[in-house]
Length: 275
Image 1 (cartoon, rainbow, N blue to C red):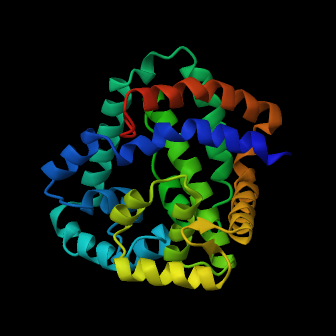
Image 2: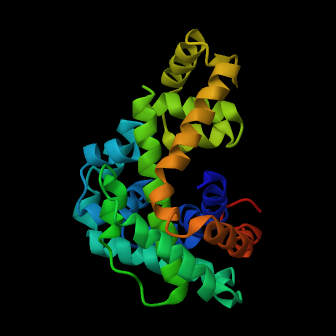
Image 3: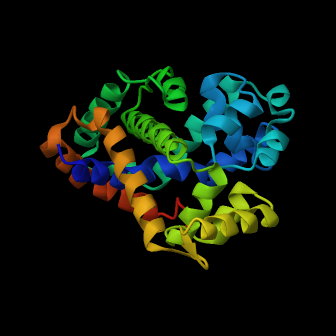
């Protein structure tokens, strides 16, 4: 089965999950729980592990500066429980998606049926995917809109764990992967620097090392750098296929078609902070 259709299905539905990292509904709820800075992000995403240690988060999230993670989680689990922050995350996701009107879109049931089938297929392959496996232990929500969000959350973490495996296999540190990502131009470099919080001297030293390896020319990818990123993305696609093979190529194309208005609605409503 060609991976292109599966990638389209994942990419078009991804905004339905990804918005949770940007919407004010989430940050306001985390603040009410007493969490500040990045603590809400790290606790809410790692809460399926239980009271996750900073080292576990550093390992599984991969590209954040360890100092930021340790500072954010220093006393976070004395302020909130995993159950509290998970509930806040779910409530924020539902409120934001309803604000964007996703519950009103006509093909919710069809989109959910395909996304859930892929997510449940992924659940048969947890080996080597710790962050995904932790999320897979969470119960499915009752409401269809939140079932769709949960399905895409599982598919995102399934793919993400595979991506981390590829970075490790290619000998790239979290910061090296981040710098190469920035050099690709797909995400603004200032956003990556601020959100991942690596010291400027570490970033500069990593750039210099990647230039020595022939992967960067100035601030842009060389042909070798482009080829490496393409190889990693292609292999990431392949590692995600156990989820999407359950749909077949036609099912993936159908999910990609159905997912487009859902992702578009998220973007148009500004839930990703893009408008």
